[in-house]
Length: 358
Picture (cartoon, rainbow, N blue to C red):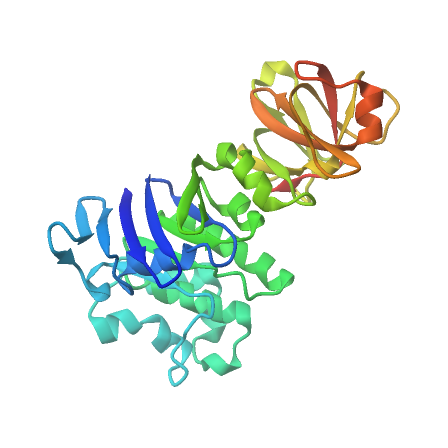
């Protein structure tokens, strides 16, 4: 478990952070300048808190009360920066094994296993200047993994990549999370990174913790929705894969109790198996109806109940609904709102146009 309660004062900024997490991936989310990267540096030992304590499992990394401040190289952590920071005069293989030959840290993970997982075998003899942005980040992640870390710190590892490279790297981060079981703290200001990777979410603003907890619950909070902005307000729905319709290429996800019949169908290229997954649904992709439509091309229709109503902008209203105990948002026009006569407690049907799959 990571447990920290730290303070650090800067010239025009004060960091005062406290949270605990034993999740496989903890995301620190917030706007640029909120203090997220500084928190990682403090955990890593690259900067020193003024006051407080940082604990990882039963090891004290920092405690001003006890006079403990382990140097970075003795904390047993792996750090991946946004800009990769590879050694330009060493090839990929030498970069990957740096912690072993320079720091004497023997990796528990097999070199070949890390190389295979990250798809680096064909790059081992290349110099960093001959790598793409995505390749550099994969090497940086591999180097961190091979340093035998008890915790992996990722500082915006996807932020400098274009959309295609980002999509290519995300599966590698998921594989690290699922196969190597090394806990991670991920700094990001991209809600898609949070949705795809994290189980625990901590929202940081001006050096303070605004919200913290389970990713689905915190994602649905007012604090998160405010930071997402009107165009990107969305909710995470936890669902269970319950079937596959090969003739249509649709995977069926049950929402809540399978006996309720609440289900979402998503196009997938193949049967993606079984188990729970998270679905990201934008408010702008959810329409509401008072009765279940029978003649429509929309396949996903869930029974819901209105729980909260707020003004989105001059022309729209934001409607929060309960679907099988989970929160779903719908952004509709004020005209539609008036015509439907919506109010808290009213039963509706949520028509979902698009879903992002984690």
